[in-house]
Amino acid sequence: MARYLGAGLAADAFNAAFRIPNLLQNLFGEGVLSASFIPEYAGLLGRGNENEATRLAGAIAGMLALIASILVALGVYTAPWLVAIIANGFTGEKRELTVLLTRILFPGAGLLVFSAWCLGILNSHRRFFISYTAPVFWNLAMIGTLIFFHKGRTEVQLAIYLAYGSVVGSALMFAVQLPQVMSLARGIRPRLTAASESVRSVVRNFIPAFVGRGVVQLSAYVDAWLASYLGNGAVSSFSYAQALYVLPISLFGMAISAAELPTMSRATGTTAEIGAYLRGRLSDGLDRIAYFIVPSAIAFLALGDLIVLVLFQSGKFQRGNTIWVWQILIGSTVGILASTMGRLYSSTFYALRDTRTPLRYAVVRVILTTGLGYFFALVLPGLLGVDRRLGAAGLTASAGLAGWVEFFLLRREMDKRIGRTRLVPARMARLWGAALAGAALPWAYKLVVDRGAPLLSAHENAVRSKLMALALLCLYGLMYLGITAAFGIPEAKNVFDRGRRLFNLALRPK
Image (cartoon, rainbow, N blue to C red; front, side):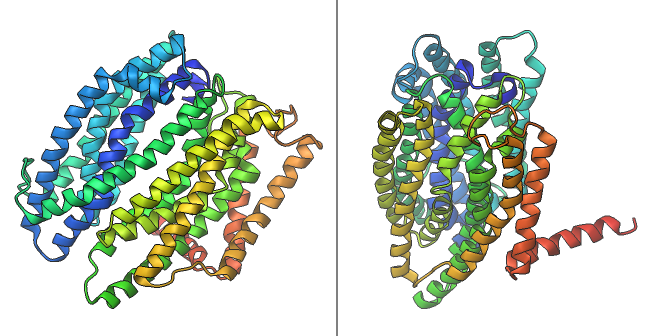
């Protein structure tokens, strides 16, 4: 997308349109999946009641089919009003294109809801590979569309083709998971019923989860709405940065939370025994998250321009775009650790069948994000006399501050339920120290190459070679790994052990 659409009108329109129907997947997919469906479904499996689990999965599929179909139809019809709400700063051709793309993308979002349903079933059976590689097919469909249709077409035309490619990819993403789902839940049939207690329990927990996810999504749409006032390219630049800072959250926050949720949901015993078990799982998960998120934050802060250069800079995406996206990434470092750990705390509440507590604190987070975002994005740049485009960085920074408030509230409430859980200060000091030490050499190299120029400028002497940028990033990662291994951090040892096993496997005679 960066290569063929850049960060102009068509890229802004596509990224804004892509957010609107994606609401369906995030609301119904994550709402039913994380908060209500998985704990109930995994609990039935843990008690050996597979027949009831299968009936539950079929009932949820039937309900999702009905509700998602209605909302897709409404979304296609109301697209002009939705765009006016989400991207009110768009006018003329940009707004018209956003409306058209929204209408094309909505049916694909309905398919993504069922892909999330498949993921819930597979995760509950501890089958993670297919469910988490399925999005590869979605991305390949979009990549293929860009490669095969870019010649001889304008950016606007290519954005329309890309929207259709996304719908095809959504269908592929669902199709590759379905066979394994059918083999695990034999005899499953979608149906509309709320006769069993398990179905009613899912519905009860779904409602606050639905509202909670809606509140969180509202925050993202507020960000997009504010970005639409920051000039041409702001929405797409914000989306490119978001794709990067969400990556470690997904890899290490959502992945760990998704893997822990079914395990936590199967906990049995007395209240004290369940509390002790959850406390151990939560502490272990927090340690793993911190090990990977700390170096991610330092990388975005010190080496974000190199990351953007390697991944995005080519074709219509030029050096100025790279610097802008880096500035937005710097804002994200404020709260990336809090946002990632907060997901694990929310999953722990879901395992306790409590969806209301995360909802309450999500509301607090959104109120703070909206107020701070408006000030940081639209007011503060004018007060400081800086380029208003830097307001996009204010959006990510304000979301980070609100994320810390939500995290502390979730942690305080969880402490009351299962006991105190904390990251060890000495261990965290080692992680931050290792990340800063690892970034020192690449940062020094940039200073030398820039010859004293401001590192947030588009100076011609800045590192421009993708190969050199990749080498500096690899050096950073290896130094962090080596330093943390020297400190005796268990996660570093695990990485080395896995690497050794893979190396030995590669050398094993056939």
